[in-house]
Image 1 (cartoon, rainbow, N blue to C red):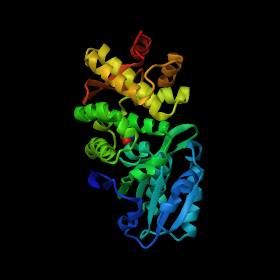
Image 2: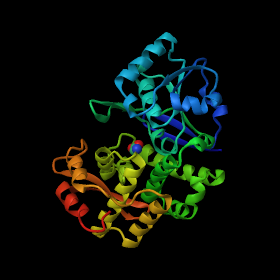
Image 3: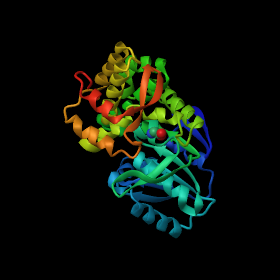
Length: 344
Ligand code: GLY
């Protein structure tokens, strides 16, 4: 096991990389522990959970609502949960987002920790302190930023994941390498097959390195005033693709990264050979790198993006693999570029 400490303005979080869920109680340090999980995770991994009170919600994005939060508050009241208790979220990104929000708001904030059970949640959603729910069709509209006390990463839990979910998690690892660690990127190019097969020594190194990149960024800029925007590489267009085409997040981010890399090359920032390396890695893993749908829909979604400022949007571009810059770009210019041949 390897440990990283994320030190942020809202609190510190211990990242326990390669620890077993069977030892999670050692980190809870409370008389009352309440698990929040979902029905799928409970069915697959319930036998590994510690014996304590549990709140099990349905799965899927549709459950990420204030109604679900209210149901959980009611149950916490019934269970007489107080400030000496700890809430443990065991599940994917949705469970982590809801648990973090509940724990941040119930009694103005009680202790919480996570055991993320998907690769995507392990390398992204569970760390960084962002939490929240959707509201009136807007994703993550209501929420806060507060660090869990710990995140426990047990790779055994990933063994039940379908291959497509592993690939989606890989997209975020590739993103971290592309924005912050050229040597990790080279390592992914050589070892991607073993990563997808969850070879222990390799997955531990890759998750550690990936989390280190995100943790260092969040430590510098938890509230996303500047540095943290780097984590949006591939997400500006990726979110628009996810929303309009309904692709899973990791696949949309893969396409978003290819577009952002090509835009970086068009602007003379990035060598074309580096774009080819990114495309090849994503292709080798089995992630999409070519859009076969109407790009106008993507641009329309960008015009409606809440992060847009006037006719411009912040975009993360690559100067080289491992080195990024944040720049404002006019949506009209973006539109013209993404319609050029060979963009994606
Ligand atoms: N998933 C991007 C962030 O945590 O900022």
